[in-house]
Amino acid sequence: MAQKTSLTSDTLTDRALQYFWKNGFYASSMENLVTAIGANRHKIYSTFGGKKQLYLACFDQYQNTVVTPAFQVVETTAADLASISAYFEYQITQGEITGLPGPGCFVANSATEIATTDADIMAKVKYHNHRLRTGFHTALQREASKTPGNLQTDTENLANLLVIFTNGLWSMSRVVDDAMILRQSANNFLHLISRAMA
Amino acid sequence: MAQKTSLTSDTLTDRALQYFWKNGFYASSMENLVTAIGANRHKIYSTFGGKKQLYLACFDQYQNTVVTPAFQVVETTAADLASISAYFEYQITQGEITGLPGPGCFVANSATEIATTDADIMAKVKYHNHRLRTGFHTALQREASKTPGNLQTDTENLANLLVIFTNGLWSMSRVVDDAMILRQSANNFLHLISRAMA
DNA sequence: CAAATATCAGAACGATCGTTCTGAGTCAAC
DNA sequence: GTTGACTCAGAACGATCGTTCTGATATTTG
Image (cartoon, rainbow over all chains, first blue to last red; front, side, top):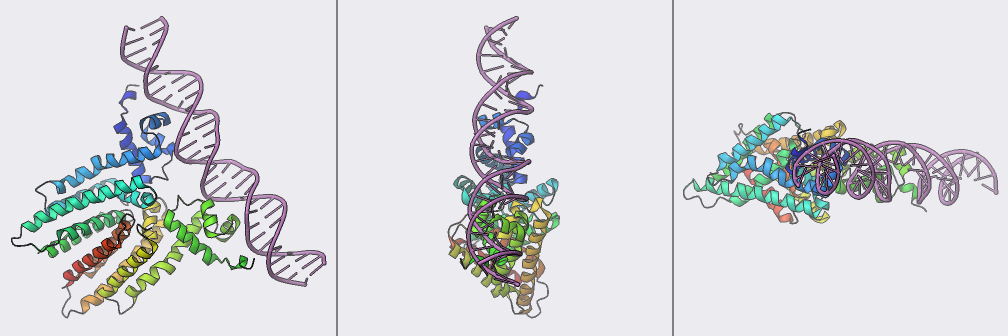
């Protein structure tokens, strides 16, 4: 019994995230969560306070362990349109590894399941969309700056379209079993963006 | 008590759809459904068989009372890109009337909530996306045919992007409170489509 | 009017929900 | 070796889940 003390709060959150992500909030009972994360009920309540708080903690975990590794390529100062393409490619590959149809985006799922009836979740969802929009925007601005004299490209609106498309793509990843469709869609959409900036 | 016999199965399904649409499957308890649709439990079980069957019946109701009135403009033989624009405008206006943030698309919500764990729901979702894709495709083909000699426009891929964008837009409609954002996004996206066909 | 049918609200079913609590077991400190 | 703080599985809580059933009321039929 050497691994008893190794169950950190971080590990619990990570395992809970995996389960919530796959099964959703309502379909994830405490009974299931307890067995899924390998901790007893007491630990969950003493550490987080309850199911809802554990769920909220998963948002930060998701940002750190999923969004940042995938999206940081877009958030660097050197990011451009190719970086956005790399982001989609990375996420689609992750979906392939996990298996399609997959769980999609944890945040988008939450937006659908409980955001409209819970202000805390709504705030987390809005933050996530804001993060994507900001990242896309700066990358598109850099891309636009490559074309000298290009001042009329509406990078803000294009960034907004990218956020919406991202949401739609992960929604689609929940019902398609071939990654090629996702990959082709991302490429085609980025091609439209590219043409709009020319 | 003259209206007792007026509660047809169609009326029940319609009211159930409204409640499911707004609250989702899991958060809609039988207790809530009974009071929401104005019928007793016995009626629900004798007519539909149970909660899940009632939910499935709502899909057909949604197609008939929501999708068809909004999307038929795209499905006519005379449809073109302007028809697609009219479809988005119609849906966004409906969202404005219902109030934003709104319930989004009933089918897309189901895809997120239960499609991955239920084959029946998955089939309904796939049918819906297929319907959208087919409608968009034929409308885009007609639009493309307006430009003589235009044979290289990949209307199939563009139709697919429209389906994904539609999913993303309704997902977004669950967290934004201003219809202008949705309207502007739809217009901007159709503008990209338009440029791609030129 | 009387008999048969349909519809109703609500009790009741076992199961499971999120949460709290109990008691046995494990560990480190001194 | 004893104490005290920890973890653990699992019992148990009231509440609510989806479903079934009961008895009263309303409507229709002959």
